[in-house]
Image (cartoon, rainbow, N blue to C red; front, side):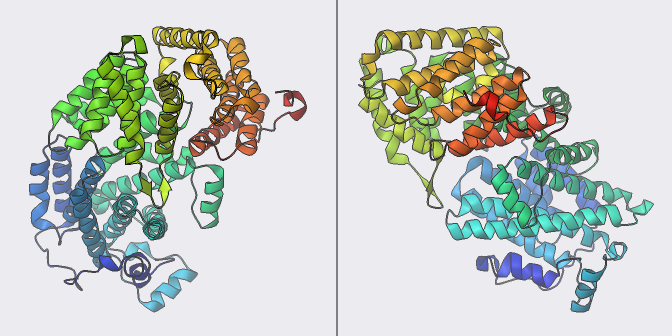
Length: 603
């Protein structure tokens, strides 16, 4: 290989970074598997995938298990399934099982990968390797190695929350990235012969998946992080990533085709709506889901994505039906139900159906261990939206207890608090300081979870939201004393931000602009919620972008990025700023937007 020998890989990726990856019974030679050739292994993997995504987990495991430890794809397939179970359930036993399985896969891959002598390795540094000399097993071992290393690195982030584990994960991801690049070199440089087509399509689908996912992931990161990653050899292009994944999607016979589809669905239905103000490719998602649900009619993941598609279209009732179908489709992974419950909390909240939203918020709080701090706080917020006059004494006591419990469950990962947990703890204290009241707390959460985009999909949803916000902001002006006087301007600024954003998505730019500038004018009077001002800047940027005033949009993005720091949920906003800059530069033919400071200074 051009930049790595197997000995160097073993040292960098296994022994030096993960002493625990060593096995007492570590194999030194490839196990005998004369009756399991590569094509048969790939065929078995396709059958196992079909069972797995139709929730027939035991059937999938029964196909793979007899050959685990000897066949690359049977071993790797088991690791992938166990990894998915680990991240969807977050059970310590599942995480440990997946970790052990991935270590075994990495070791087996290293035994199958191309062996280079020291002389060959030095020669490869001077010229391109002869990829035609690689056997089919060696080619697929390189790809499986990259996949296993990536999954092990990702698992490290939830398996061990120390700083050392994060550094180890970073080293693994770097090695994984290099291995995927090597796989891409094999794909484009090898002289593929006709007899190899039976396994080339499987290799190509994996390379497209890996290169595509890496590029997409890196392209979403804030510019400062991207510059650092580029310095150490990483690069990322959103367009390249999407193109590679779509090419992988076209390889329908490829064993990793379904993973390409899932990655595209996750990007277009989840990531785009969490990190940006853009729309995902819902038309593609609609077509892809029809195809996948025809193949996997009971597939919990695809039923979930179908619910997410309807949610992003503003069809909240339809979304809830699909989420319910996903929950009912399987009982093996109870924790996956919680993802659907989370979605139903916010689908019903968008519909302003606070009772049904609270029902699922309660389910999350009682059943899920992911973040009791966030669950307690959001349930209390949703209950508060029903209004004090509509709450019984028992309801009020429940809310008070929930708020008192919010700080008790706060977590630290690698020495850092989770930003939304920190926010929830601050707001729970604010609740106490404001006579057991909060101003539009669930609407604020919907805004911070970037759900206002959903309201824009249906006029009725938008109008109902505006009436709710308008009613409460007017009530705040008439009776500011109900929240005490300490945070009067924080509440006013929040009301103006929510109202201005709602008016923006209702395409009422002049009134929206007035509200958002009111937030900025209150900057010096805000006591604690300093995040409201930079968020208002970004909302103004979106407003001007929609009006075609791109220089003004650029100025407000730049101002939010450079003039404000140290506020709540800062990283969340920086992701939006980065993505907004990307779309702004795409919108302007000459690119490299520069804000007109003379025109914009008065803002």
